[in-house]
Length: 119
Image (cartoon, rainbow, N blue to C red; front, side, top):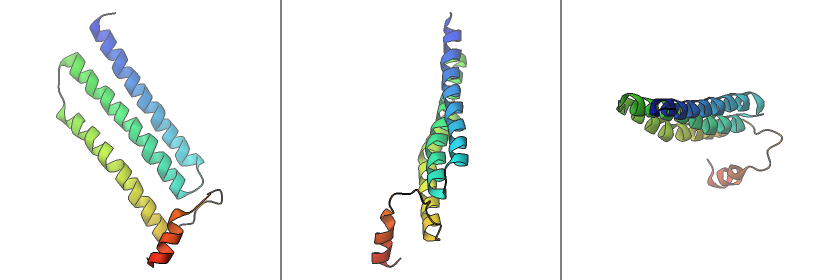
Protein backbone atom coordinates (compact mmCIF):
# COMPACT_ATOMS: atom_id res chain seq x y z
CA UNK A 1 0.00 0.00 0.00
CA UNK A 2 1.48 3.31 -1.02
CA UNK A 3 1.24 6.58 0.89
CA UNK A 4 -1.79 7.82 -1.06
CA UNK A 5 -3.80 4.71 -0.22
CA UNK A 6 -3.01 5.15 3.45
CA UNK A 7 -4.15 8.79 3.36
CA UNK A 8 -7.41 7.78 1.72
CA UNK A 9 -7.99 5.11 4.37
CA UNK A 10 -7.32 7.51 7.25
CA UNK A 11 -9.60 10.17 5.77
CA UNK A 12 -12.22 7.53 5.03
CA UNK A 13 -12.14 6.27 8.61
CA UNK A 14 -12.68 9.79 9.95
CA UNK A 15 -15.57 10.36 7.54
CA UNK A 16 -17.10 6.99 8.45
CA UNK A 17 -16.85 7.76 12.18
CA UNK A 18 -18.53 11.10 11.49
CA UNK A 19 -21.34 9.41 9.61
CA UNK A 20 -21.88 6.95 12.47
CA UNK A 21 -22.08 9.74 15.03
CA UNK A 22 -24.46 11.71 12.80
CA UNK A 23 -26.67 8.64 12.47
CA UNK A 24 -26.67 8.16 16.25
CA UNK A 25 -27.63 11.81 16.59
CA UNK A 26 -30.62 11.29 14.31
CA UNK A 27 -31.62 8.18 16.24
CA UNK A 28 -31.41 10.11 19.50
CA UNK A 29 -33.54 12.87 18.04
CA UNK A 30 -36.25 10.36 17.21
CA UNK A 31 -35.92 8.16 20.29
CA UNK A 32 -35.59 10.50 23.28
CA UNK A 33 -38.76 11.70 25.06
CA UNK A 34 -38.42 15.47 25.52
CA UNK A 35 -36.79 18.59 24.17
CA UNK A 36 -33.94 18.59 26.66
CA UNK A 37 -32.67 15.08 26.05
CA UNK A 38 -33.13 15.46 22.30
CA UNK A 39 -31.12 18.66 22.26
CA UNK A 40 -28.42 16.96 24.30
CA UNK A 41 -28.21 14.05 21.87
CA UNK A 42 -28.17 16.29 18.84
CA UNK A 43 -25.64 18.77 20.18
CA UNK A 44 -23.11 16.20 21.37
CA UNK A 45 -23.15 13.54 18.70
CA UNK A 46 -23.92 15.74 15.70
CA UNK A 47 -21.14 18.08 16.77
CA UNK A 48 -18.68 15.19 16.94
CA UNK A 49 -19.98 13.76 13.66
CA UNK A 50 -19.57 17.01 11.74
CA UNK A 51 -16.15 17.57 13.28
CA UNK A 52 -14.95 14.12 12.23
CA UNK A 53 -16.25 14.58 8.69
CA UNK A 54 -14.60 17.98 8.36
CA UNK A 55 -11.36 16.66 9.88
CA UNK A 56 -11.31 13.72 7.46
CA UNK A 57 -11.87 16.09 4.55
CA UNK A 58 -9.17 18.44 5.82
CA UNK A 59 -6.65 15.60 6.20
CA UNK A 60 -7.47 14.21 2.77
CA UNK A 61 -6.83 17.49 0.97
CA UNK A 62 -3.79 18.31 3.11
CA UNK A 63 -2.02 14.96 2.77
CA UNK A 64 -3.13 13.89 -0.71
CA UNK A 65 -3.05 17.17 -2.63
CA UNK A 66 -0.96 19.34 -0.32
CA UNK A 67 -3.83 21.84 -0.15
CA UNK A 68 -4.20 23.61 3.20
CA UNK A 69 -7.83 24.71 3.48
CA UNK A 70 -8.38 27.55 5.89
CA UNK A 71 -12.12 27.28 5.18
CA UNK A 72 -12.23 23.75 6.58
CA UNK A 73 -10.25 24.83 9.64
CA UNK A 74 -12.63 27.73 10.21
CA UNK A 75 -15.58 25.38 9.77
CA UNK A 76 -14.14 23.02 12.39
CA UNK A 77 -13.50 25.93 14.76
CA UNK A 78 -16.95 27.50 14.41
CA UNK A 79 -18.83 24.20 14.70
CA UNK A 80 -16.81 23.33 17.79
CA UNK A 81 -17.47 26.76 19.26
CA UNK A 82 -21.11 27.39 18.41
CA UNK A 83 -22.86 24.02 18.63
CA UNK A 84 -22.73 23.59 22.43
CA UNK A 85 -23.64 27.24 22.99
CA UNK A 86 -26.67 26.99 20.72
CA UNK A 87 -27.85 23.79 22.42
CA UNK A 88 -27.51 25.41 25.83
CA UNK A 89 -29.44 28.51 24.76
CA UNK A 90 -32.22 26.47 23.15
CA UNK A 91 -32.61 24.35 26.27
CA UNK A 92 -32.60 27.44 28.45
CA UNK A 93 -35.26 29.11 26.28
CA UNK A 94 -37.40 25.97 26.30
CA UNK A 95 -37.17 25.74 30.09
CA UNK A 96 -38.02 29.40 30.63
CA UNK A 97 -40.98 29.20 28.26
CA UNK A 98 -42.46 26.37 30.31
CA UNK A 99 -41.75 23.22 28.30
CA UNK A 100 -42.21 20.37 30.76
CA UNK A 101 -39.60 17.72 31.42
CA UNK A 102 -40.31 14.09 30.61
CA UNK A 103 -41.83 11.90 33.30
CA UNK A 104 -38.63 9.85 33.33
CA UNK A 105 -36.53 12.85 34.38
CA UNK A 106 -34.93 12.32 37.76
CA UNK A 107 -34.38 15.87 38.96
CA UNK A 108 -34.81 19.50 38.02
CA UNK A 109 -31.86 21.58 39.22
CA UNK A 110 -33.14 24.91 37.92
CA UNK A 111 -36.54 24.77 39.59
CA UNK A 112 -35.38 25.86 43.06
CA UNK A 113 -32.97 28.42 41.61
CA UNK A 114 -35.61 30.12 39.49
CA UNK A 115 -38.22 30.09 42.28
CA UNK A 116 -35.82 31.72 44.75
CA UNK A 117 -34.44 34.19 42.22
CA UNK A 118 -37.90 35.11 40.90
CA UNK A 119 -37.10 34.76 37.21
